[in-house]
Image (cartoon, rainbow over all chains, first blue to last red; front, side, top):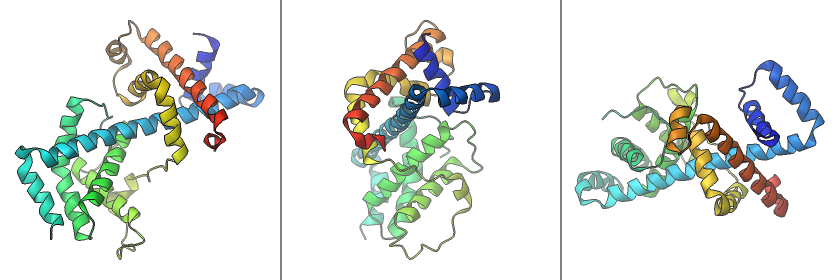
Length: 89
Length: 184
């Protein structure tokens, strides 16, 4: 694997706390001496945040689909009635 | 109906079947709770969907364990979110937290820039985002995951994963330089 990919792998292990204490110390020393590694780590963390958001969007889209199905499927009339009567007082 | 402990969320028909079972089992209790507090059906849906997000995110965490049924846990999250969301308006804002609230981490705030950034990244990097999503959110052994994604070995799948991370990271850097707001 080329160096830039190994750096990404190392950065991931460091961020996720999967590095041994010794390796983490070496990595931290590299962070101090390499502004590029620091910058890349900052943006890699942004990528994990984006992936988390993407995962949330996928869950919400699926929940929306299921919600719409449950409230329109004639076979779910009992469920619909049970919910609707709570709000139609 | 007994529902399973939260697992990682994998989009697909099978997952929607699970979700439907969860919905039918837990949503009526959430709706009853919200309606008793003068909330609307839309409010109930909102807190329930947010609770589902936390439920699946928690299920994805390595050291996650619950000491109650999954239904009770999910209902607990929804109730907690309701109190958080409507704390200012609710007369019940002095109500002590539920016993199982200690398991509920407040949902991390996502700022508007992150939503914009995701849209920009998705425009050109959807394939990579889907691959990375599979790696980080599908709880499968490396060998099975690599095979499912169409790679001959774990190693080639891993290399692809880091190449995708590099591509997405570089896209984020590029967009961040165009919009200084993303650097916050």
